[in-house]
Length: 257
Image 1: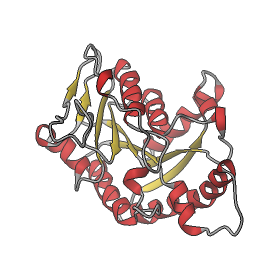
Image 2: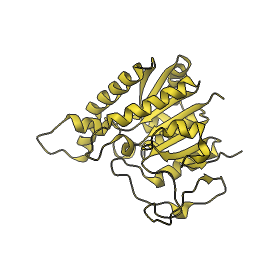
Image 3: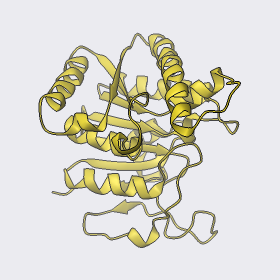
């Protein structure tokens, strides 16, 4: 069955240990998204990685505060990031379009409708939207919590069938994942309270963490959309989630009826 799928790829998936962009992993994810498209699914990609991409390009010779770094590295990195996606998707004959957005664009009104109309016409014409926050102007109170929040808002706006949140961990565990006794929680129904298992830590390279993913998943679940949290570092993870769901490690939030 044809589905509209929003895929969010986190910074920890796209970033190497040295903080630079992992082009090999990008290529593997593009291969899998191309497979989804070949199977007839519509895909919207919410991608982190602009900061890492910019950080790998620039070597500043003077100190910058955190806001200046975010603006500079994101401005330079976003161009490189989308350029890489363009080249990788072109190998499959897939056209991509960039959507840079801000939190205020999700308030009811003209901007919200324009944004939805833009992505709708892209999908109708076979163009794959690549969405990210406009980090050059979104600072402090104007920022999304992270791209988890952004991907959830996109999923609801575009009436997606599924939201896949890819991180560097298999999902939500019943205790700290480093604990050898920890067990993966595979399914979370609307009435299932797992808040006691959520760790407050943020990710190494991004602003999010499992707390953010849990919050986003709950909100999207209430909108009737299926949400999956899975490990983007696993080989062929997206294809396996669609074709071999039961035996692929993940946490699924089943939608409200």
